[in-house]
Image: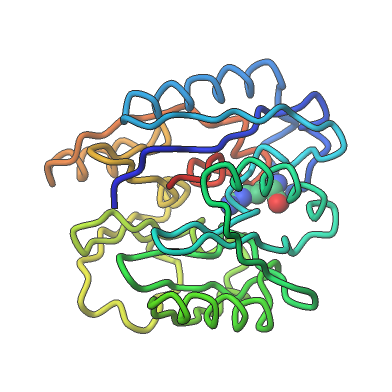
Length: 257
Ligand code: CIR
């Protein structure tokens, strides 16, 4: 799938007050903003036009826009994020998205879905059931996707405490290949795909993004970068230390379509 557009949101001054389980320390907002600017620059270099939303200080996790929507070629869905503190992030993203995709579908209460749990591989969606995405939300999402001709299957990641979201441990690269952390759950239905396994020491790097002719991966994980390079991918490594401190990664920082 080729992307022409991305929506991002600049980290606000309240960024460090967001949700996290990480023991990596408090993020530095200046550094986070610099890393965010580099991320936007990398997206542009991949051929994507970047729409940048202003920060809203009421929502410290607002920079992780991926969780607020699921966007495919034939349908765009506004989610209902699983953390109560994040629900208010949705209207601004929905308004921006409507400029591009006027007909938005929506996940309704009591369902909850975080976009980080949704991994699209061509016409199929793997939907993680997590502390954020519940069964009801997953069922609503699968039904919406089915109406638009996509298939979906559920992957329960609740026993995998180190994974906030399904995509914290898995990335669809295209070409029927996944990058997957060695300790991440193996969803049913992976048999037709080639798996590029990431060893435990580099597990964080399993969250990356394929953007057109490039694969963006977190800096500091040389074995995965070398393997992707060997496979012929154009790899760009980006520093995301300040997002890791808040349990975020490369995919969380944008909605791509
Ligand atoms: C949260 O806990 O909701 C944020 N601090 C991190 C969200 C990361 N999003 C993602 O992986 N899609």
